[in-house]
Every structure is written in C-alpha cells, then in structure tokens.
Length: 203
Image (cartoon, rainbow, N blue to C red; front, side, top):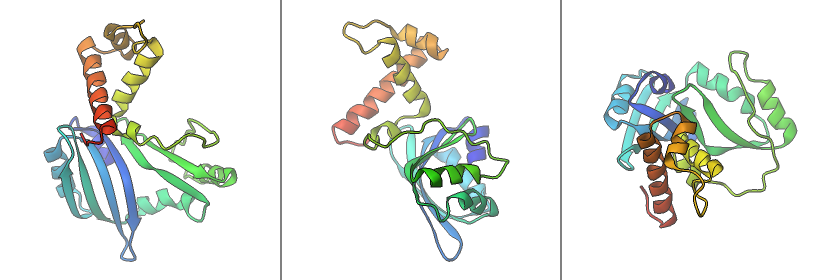
C-alpha cells in the first residue's frame, strides 16, 4: 500500500496509529489516510496479502482504515531491529508519497543506536533529531498533512502570523514554490483542522 501511495495521485499521506500481531501471523493495523476513499479501497481489494479491512469516514479528505493482513517476510525484517529493545514507538508512523517512512521513538540511547545500526543495508536510515523528551506529545500536529505542516512552518518563519504581519500568502507561496491559491488552501485547511481540534470536534 505504500507503493500505491507513491505511484498514485489518489493519496498523499498514510499514518499508522496502532498495530498488533497475532499468533496466526496476522498483522492488525489502524491507519488514517489522506486521499480518495474509493481508490484506496480498490487498492486494498487488489492486495493479495490483505485478509480483511473496514473503513470509516473522517472528513472530506481523509478516512480511517482498519486492516488485517498476513505477516510477510518484509514486515518481519522491518520489525527485527526493534525486537528486545527498551524503546517505544510514538504514533503515528507516517508513510509519505515520496517513499519515506517517518517515526519517533523514545528509549535508552544505546537501544536507539542499536535499532539504527541493525537495519538492513537496503534501508536508508536518517536521524532527523536527537533530544531529551521534554515536550508533550503533539497529537494535534498529526492531524495535518506533511504539506500543510510545511506551509504553516514556513508561514511562522516568515512572519505571516505576526501582528502586524510581516509576510503575505504570496511570500509563503514563493517559499513553497507553489501558486498563491495553493498556499492559501494549505493554510486554510490547516487552520480549520486545528480549530476543530481545539474546539473538541473532529474534522
């Protein structure tokens, strides 16, 4: 399904929120997908390893997917470095349309280093940040797509949210290398999602 995300224009982000395995070698997973519900469901139907799934509408752009699938060799290989380590993975794990898998882990430094060192050579592992975990879990930020987060970050850096403003939507668009209407749409959707989160509503 990550290949579908990379190759299709019908989805832009998948977030893995929870997962477990069973003695019958079935993986059970809960995803949030940003994309076209019908296209993604059709891809699940065509995936031979998927044994069952169900979807739940979230909003006009995203939905939840409960998936049961047979544990494949590549799944076991990916999990191997994490086994028997004193670490926790902080959800969600993000799968992007650029082919990246992004995650946050917390635990003993020596165990984190061992996880990085023991990934097979075919994985290109990059560490984006190492720090003491002093901040709270930023669940709200996970509501946004990667592009929406990028737009908000650029807007903050440029002074779009300052009073008075020191940057315009056009400035944000120039930094993102996109049309002003596209930048405005990213910001508006991000604002709407965060506002509904703060108000205690899902969107």
